[in-house]
Structure formats: structure tokens, C-alpha cells
Image 1 (cartoon, rainbow, N blue to C red):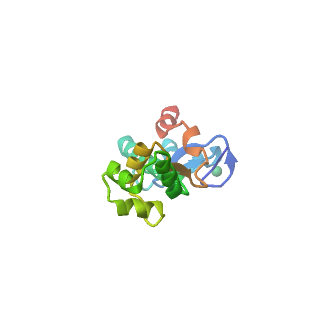
Image 2: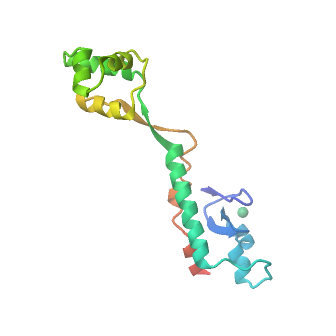
Image 3: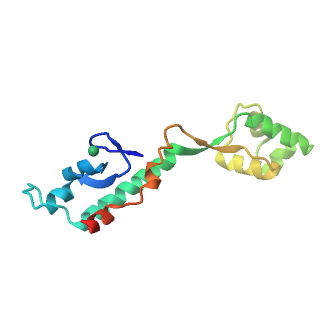
Length: 166
Ligand SMILES: [Zn+2]
């Protein structure tokens, strides 16, 4: 179920259209407000309809933008809570002292001491080295709320399809 961006009605029959140059997902009722509909009916429109290539380019740009935004909004890699203890435990399991771990990672011992005490957030690079050397997992993919609307994937119809059908 999706929501019409013009009238707000919930419907399964959503169409991606341009309205005054903005791409919107609208219900069957609101398709008549779209630029394409106006154009196909030959009604007088003040501005000339944008050419297909312009529309496609705009569409692509918009989709790219939405995709990258989606990825950013829904998932991010974050250090697990209690990573400091995980490192400490894994190191002790190997029977290593901080000195030895530091050498294995090519880091200063003071860095290890700080990381294990939680006083220093390890860099991405150091996290990767720690994970590999100690054979532990220090990161997790975190999903933020509100990112799971499922509207971007289920709707396979593109503006191109819409134009072809008309
Ligand atoms: Zn509507």
C-alpha cells in the first residue's frame, strides 16, 4: 500500500508522474494533474512540455539521490556497544598483553590501552585490523527507524512505462 503524494489517499495503484516539473507518486485520481496528462489531452499549457530525455535525466538524478539517501537513512555501520571489552577478552584469550597486540597491529601500546578502556574510538582502519587479528566482530549494521517503508523497491513502474502506455 502506498500513499498518493497529492491527495494523501492510500492506494495500490500509484503512478510516478511529473506535476509542474516535480516527480510525484500519485493515485489514479490525481494522474489528471500530471504534466503528461495535460500534454496528452492537448490542453493549453503555458510552458512547453520537457522533452523525454530531459525527463529521463531528471528522473535518473532523482532516483540516484533517493537511493543514496535511502542507504544512508536505513543502514550504517557502527561499533558494537562494549567493543572495548570484546577487544580485551579476545586479546586475553590469545594470551597476549597490550604490547603484543599493539605490535601485531602496528600501533602504539598507548592506543590499545585507550581503546580497551573506552577512552578512544578506534578508526575504521584500526577496527578492521582488530577484527582480523583477534578474529572478532566489532561492527554491526544499524537500521534507523522510518527507513522501512518499502515504497522504493516494490514500485517497479517507471515514468518510461507510463509514457509508453499512454
Ligand atoms: Zn491522489
